Image 1 (spheres, one colour):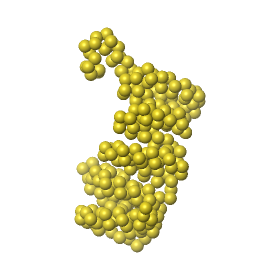
Image 2 (cartoon, rainbow, N blue to C red; image 1 turned 60 degrees about the vertical axis):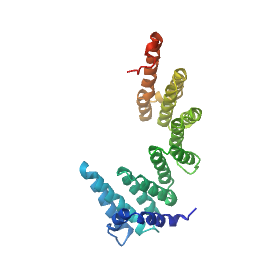
Image 3 (cartoon, rainbow, N blue to C red; image 1 turned 90 degrees about the vertical axis):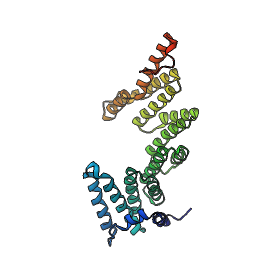
Image 4 (cartoon, one colour; image 1 turned 135 degrees about the vertical axis):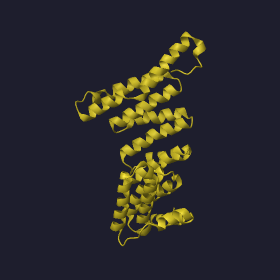
Length: 273
């Protein structure tokens, strides 16, 4: 593995192989201090927030390369490099520069000493790989974050949920069920548990095991009953989350479809609306 401080230079070299990227990088003014370089990038970020929809792609690209310039010009500023790379990646995603965004997230993972930022970079890399249909690669990243004891617990819980969802995308339903169960039972925050129960129930609906799906909903309500009973903001949030579970409607529609099919087998292959 390359020493962390070599990673930013490596990324600049890879960008330099693309004349278009190098041209955009060279157009960014160079400042004497990292503070001034960051202020320039922050000013461009403010323009992104105020830009008209038609101007957003250009504004985002300019902002992304302003952040890349922070770490290119001040590679010794480790915290600034990690923060700038993350911000650059966020903008690059919006302009469909997925590979460039992934490289920036790799810089964050190599340079960040902030465990929260590093975990966010892993998650965002995994999400991006999944959206690019590299589900196996995304799964490896999610699993790696689950095993990272230094990562914040809620980030590990989020990764566990996505491990389950990724297994489902790969058609490995037994593994998906195992991980979604784990997320539902072990997540440290009640709202994360609701989300996991929701995905767990939806998984059973998707494979037409409606009895198991109903059982998951019952378990969800029973296990979260003490929190629901609280007259607190958390209790209110959990009550709202339970009422808004998408799996409830999915299950109701599936039960109704099954009932119709039993009454008239000719409808078995018709879409249910």
